[in-house]
Length: 287
Image (cartoon, rainbow, N blue to C red):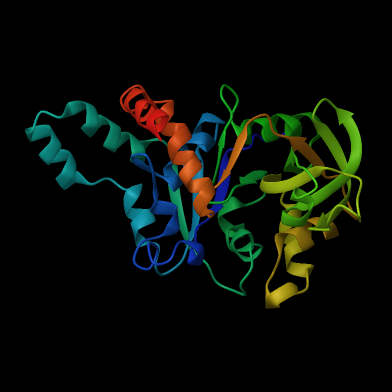
């Protein structure tokens, strides 16, 4: 079985929920404390054993590409200033993986960037995560949890987490059969069905390990809601020919396309830091 060594990260979206902040900068470059969202996503992938990061970009995403490039002028300036620790940190951003950039072409929808990465991925398993989702998982990263399930069963794996009644209106819902602790074989995948139409309280979230069969499924999938190519439609089609598993992730999820979730992430990640956590905690106690 081939190892999962590549991740596809779509970053071509407009980030309209954060306008006007995203008018001139990508939403993926919004900071959580002092690092952009996309850096957290990439670091988590690298901790899971990923060595090649494929960023599917658009015309307004040059800042994302520049962030993972070497900035020799800045590095030289930091060296002259004797700021060796931060220089090393800046250099590490470009060193932590091999970065490949693909411009998105085709219809709107979250299935298109995955299909655009086909030539770079080749005939091997790969992960897909979104550029504005992060997980706080402690010892075992989100992608690593998916990879371990893939390594056991050899078939695609999707991210799942427990939700409440309200969650059935906000997220896709998975119905399936438990095959291991925290692992389901998916039998049905529904888009925001509401609490009356399903007994399941397992939500489907962004984050996948796919085999190359997903590309053929995407090519055969018809354009769906809103005139867009949807990844979930391709997954449902793929379920007709092979098993799909879901892993209930152990960790906390932040949708950083949401303003409230972005604010929560900044607070939670800052409180966990030695350099700013104590002072922030004192401030929050005064509120």
